[in-house]
Length: 61
Image (cartoon, rainbow, N blue to C red; front, side, top):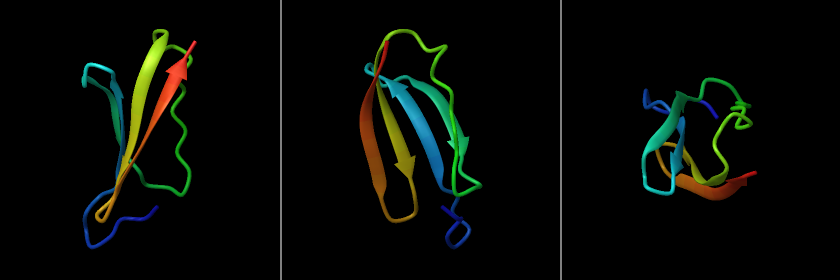
């Protein structure tokens, strides 16, 4: 994803209580965030762009 009209795209990972664990600007077509050190449980991964918000629930063992 690229920046659109000066608005930065970013990724955010939240726990199920809504606390932001990671928030990072997306500056490349591919961004990796290792989750192996996260505590076991469910998380919400959001990708926010100028036009849309994509979200997925993920489980970390």
